[in-house]
Image (cartoon, rainbow, N blue to C red; front, side, top):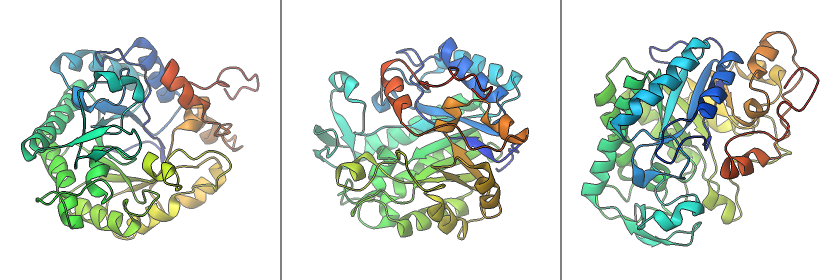
Length: 361
């Protein structure tokens, strides 16, 4: 992945751990969680949703990448993960108008590409000015540089799942008449500016990835043909890896589907979108969602560069080592999604983890 070589093709996909302080500093519990993943053998750990600015926070227990004073505590996290033989990347996020309702009272207003009533949150959204957009672009660049200085080995731009960059790409959210709205090329401008600003801040040798939605789950959202064009453009610009996801809260509300799929689902349920993009780009492509069976993963790795998972690693942080050690029984995760409830209440966790006595968790 660019200059970064990972030890296997199993990637921990980012999720909001909800284990940082209200000022954005990682707690010891977050460090322990990521160290456990590192010891468990995942080839790459993408830590979850670090906000690039206070206005871009999704919740009040997310990790911050918005202030220089956070570089030192974040470096302690990185050193601990690397000591455990882990490779860690930071995911960078501005949530736009998609926020955790628990922090709505602190928001002076929700921000997005266009003024509207947010179709998921139900609150008014203010249209970002061009100057404000450029400030956010700069915030991304500064956050990426902080991540590099803290010791992360790569950064990932979160451009999926209904957050700000995804909102700019979607015609259901972006009604602008200026250079940021209209055609797909114009709706993509914000993303391209973010990538170029990050690349300018961290340099050509530092890996920059993206997580993007290939299908938002409803008419008016991002469609596969849109995602293919955007991915191809980013590949030509020098992006180092593309993680292909799909689904948004808006899609779920409109009768489509969210990005967090409950059981039962088809193994590798979004693989077809990753393969469509893989055909058009040269950089590595990662397929996320629904991977549970290592035998099917091995077959899939003949066609794709890596697979990423989150929920299975929540239940079994040592899942990669278990599979690599020869125990090829499927992941124990049953996709009950109760880990998400824990994240909102007390931080990321699994109601089953460390309760079984079979040696797997």
